[in-house]
Length: 109
Image 1 (spheres, helix red, strand yellow):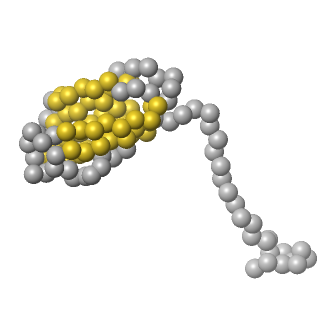
Image 2: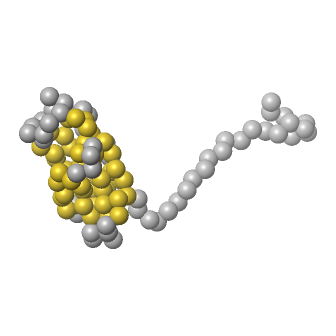
């Protein structure tokens, strides 16, 4: 209900909330394709000021299968897993010894 300025009803305005930040966020994408049979890719972004980053792959019991050093910036990790048994696994992005994000991936036949 808009008014001509003399009424008591307020005029509805478009509202927009914007958050600005100069810090870059760490991004860990879901693997594609998911689920996968032989290979899959994982995209990530790590800010330039981070020098110690790893991607750790584990089985569902928490056993480490592989640890890979990853560089800062945008990157893609290609995972070849044709010799891996069918099931669920997880991958974690570790920055300076701390897990910042983990995701699950499913291996099919």
